[in-house]
Amino acid sequence: LYQRHSTALKQFHLALGSTVDPRNPEELKRLLRHRTVTGFADFERYFDPVRYLLDNDPEFSYHQECFRQIIIDSASEGNRLVGIRATLGGHWRSPDEFQKAVLAAVIGILRGEKAVGYRTLGVIILGIRKDLAQEKAERLLQTWLMLRESLRYDYSDYAAKLAGVDSVGGEESFDPAIHFNIFKKARSAGLLIMYHIGEAWQLGSLLEKLEQ
Image (cartoon, rainbow, N blue to C red; front, side):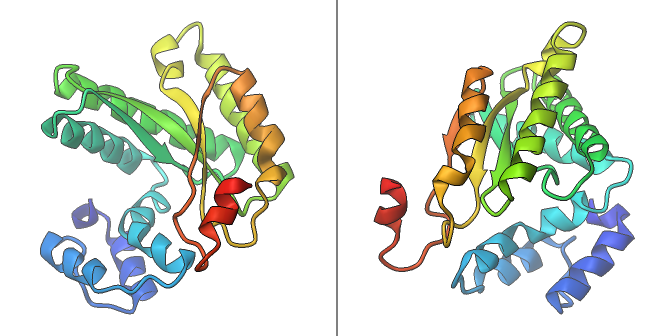
């Protein structure tokens, strides 16, 4: 994808201050292998190569290709079902742009399933960032649910791919009670509920976050 996306390639170099070529898998591996993770910001940088592509994809064609490839790769690993956790830019995109990103991802999944003869199926788990303000997180879930409902009758195969929600991000300074009602609403709507914990935490605080 970087081969055909010069803008993202330039941003990759500017952001990392590196001449590493992300079009070369071996160079990319070396860059990520030697990173030291001291907090959530460092952890998130492992996703930068994909983020620079998807955040600079006005036609959402790379979304389709990326999600299609995930299904193909999962099929090669022998998986029958893969849940793809993704924020899809919900924390910064407008509702309209977010919906376009979601639909592109769904189309990519469906194309990937067809490419592997339906040996592997995929669904999307919406990642709701822990650092999102409650009101913004509520709007994001509402957009997700409204899109799912609008697809239910005429495009039921699309709607089925919007399968669940997950809480993502670092636990530092986050109170799970802030998003409690959001996940309660998602559960009432029939979505799968997941809750990531342990992506990044201060020494000795993981048990506290699990108890919360």
